[in-house]
Length: 401
Ligand SMILES: [Zn+2]
Image 1 (tube, rainbow, N blue to C red):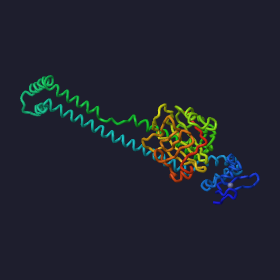
Image 2 (image 1 turned 90 degrees about the vertical axis):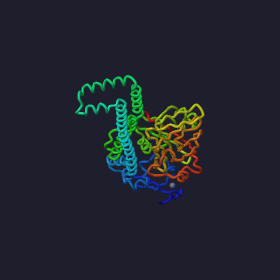
Image 3 (image 1 turned 60 degrees about the vertical axis):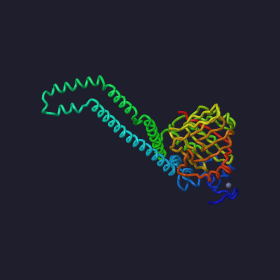
Image 4 (image 1 turned 90 degrees about the horizontal axis):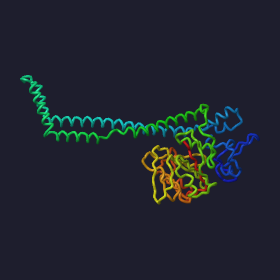
């Protein structure tokens, strides 16, 4: 790739000035120097245009209906489709495993019930000497069968009401205990998670089909919301990963207004759920995380992990224009860790200290890397020096259901 002659940086975009019939090749620093950051409709990202011709065509002077369709279609990238397909196949496989497990549990449950009943009946037959009765009715030579049978019954009644009573009561107690201790397949536990997965599955499939044919999406999924830190395209990408869309979005914290310190932070987020936290470091790296879990500032000096049973929490890092996602692993580990003194902590993978400016990213404990892995080495390169975050801006958005 060419280098920019002014900044000696890589050329990343073409700046279209079609009214004067000129174009300029620019680097990211040119964009900042010349204040082009707001003119995204005139900037063609070279990295993208190779894969998606619409990146250029939608920004030229062409018929408005074609232009608008192409710019909406830009959101449907091959990478997104691959990622979505893989993630949701994984989820379907998880549901299949849950069902398989339930089938196995059901099988052994009924086997166990049958075994206990068999054992109970064997015990009962032994106690009441039932073989005597059986030989009575089998024996065809027997004279006066009815009398013999009634004698057997009288004897049985006497015994059961007398010396064999305890024996039978013990047998019943033993049977009841065994039935009570037989593990019943836990359907209700799983019903919730399967229903949740199914609902989410349906939603994401609908959303992606809309993205691939934007004319199908009659209603805009989100009210216009302008992030102070993220581009609207990347905000949209983040919001698409959050289930239960079509909800209200509101900014509940912005560091530049409220001050970047742990008290204003906790005052803003305390007892709130469904928060998307967006941070920007001094070297302009944007990162953050989302969790449906409720944030609480603990009163005493201790730590408390909160699990995300929906497995929808994720971390993200923006490199250039691209977002890298790190969804929570499907393991039972806390998605967030609450404390009294420090800032937010996403499963020890993203830790913000009490000054709300320093902290660390150590991916791989609780959150996994998605399709594009980022090594710890690359992270240190991105974040600079000692993996110290140097945050100078933060915005928190709440998704209200
Ligand atoms: Zn430049």
